[in-house]
Image (cartoon, rainbow, N blue to C red; front, side, top):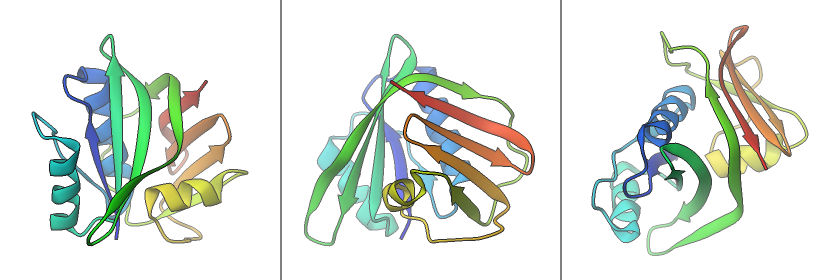
Length: 150
């Protein structure tokens, strides 16, 4: 399955960088520039790539502002809850290698596992600390990405 990360139209560099970082860190994920594609076009691209989820990252004033998730099926699609309002996004380290697996931990791990369409993995190369108000991705002991929601 997996997830396709993309942005809103005219999102700014921050949202594009966040999309690329998430796609590099989440196994089975891809990032595609949206350009002038409609949401229906993005859904079609997700189907073409065999992805069961879409994450649409909106930008405001050059920074990522919201994350919307959608479930994609063969003949239908729909938005998922919740919509995350991004209070801050910190991309800490450039990624040298993409992880083959990820372990999600924390109070909101199940919710994020479903949203990101990743399987349950223990001892993954990457880890994600999933709380109700934050999401932190680590590769080994190095923090790669930290999102705070508000």
